Length: 493
Image (cartoon, rainbow, N blue to C red; front, side):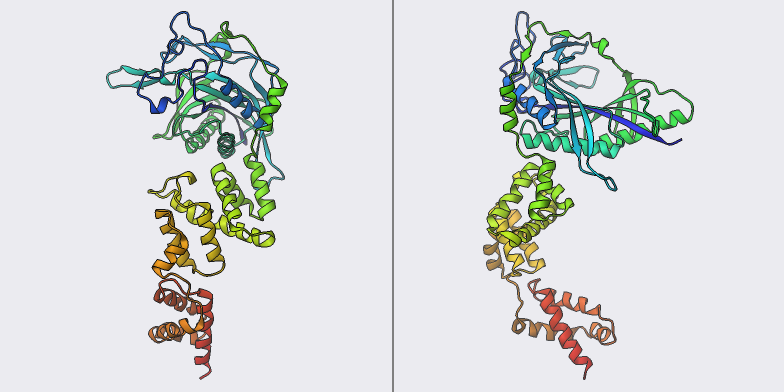
């Protein structure tokens, strides 16, 4: 029997507000000494009252709108009860039956062979508070840092519409990109500001029945999510084929062993004993506020990718790489603007710019010594535009242009200054290259004989020798033409 995965994701996103969700303590817990961002409210001292952070509500509303959700007219907070030492109050303030946003979808680009985009339903987007941080120490005791307790969280719950681990990975990457575009969070799994839990089951392909599922936790990288889902799908299929039941439980991902392991039985809503938070009245959401927030939404990743294809003539691949990060997309457009072209020349310049950003820039960005993000690059868009223009005019050979770019990346110096100082200007005139051609032909008899014997590909080796002799400054196409003319003349003798 052929099986298909049924996957739903629950993603917690820390919101980048200045203060916590229900008090005025700073939310910059990562840069602060332990237990210094605390007050009577987030310490849960007797007699204190929470107050809702308006900026956090607005950030969550932005995410809901970006995910095509309906925004509730009235939303409320609830107490979610469970005994764990990182909860200062013994309960978490969350939302249960009246979330801020609901009934939306996230659209993914069309998969290979598919007719159109893939739409993943969004069940709800709700607000809550983060918990304190425990550091488990040798000997069985733990240290508690309360700085994180009360930091605003938003949870995005998908419908069980995801049909493969690869699709789950694409969903996560797109959601991260949307959050970063909105500027409401860093969405970094490595930093812990973006956490993913997955609900997984399998069923006979084509069936509409939902079977017993498991929940997977402890996945701290996008790649770990994909690996954990792939393992769990294989495990459940194996159980079904062996006639054994799938136990509904929470499982943790062990990255070193590459497998999921049982943690505890899966909780249901009634296990948390939800009831309305008595210290916070329901929030009535004014429609004018919703429209004000909607008007402030930026162009989102999928729309920007489609515009890059239409406006600049970029391939779907190049456009998707550039649009994935708002910072990179902005850098690209600033570079194109600095080029100062219009019409077809602008599209040609944009394509060359995309080549440099997705090629050499990406390579150096993600090298061991690279900053990892475009925000850490020393090259200004204007400087990259100058290099792109010089390369397009063939003032620089391919080899020389890469050498210039590497120095620009390391130092932030202008391309023209580097070219002048290092003498890297292209050698393309016949008068300058003729002596080099003579020298290369005289010094490479074997390759010359191969060419004269009919092996025309030998000319590529000779062009390489010309490039080597000129320090990469020669125009390869001019060198090839001159070499062929010289060698063809030798054939006729």
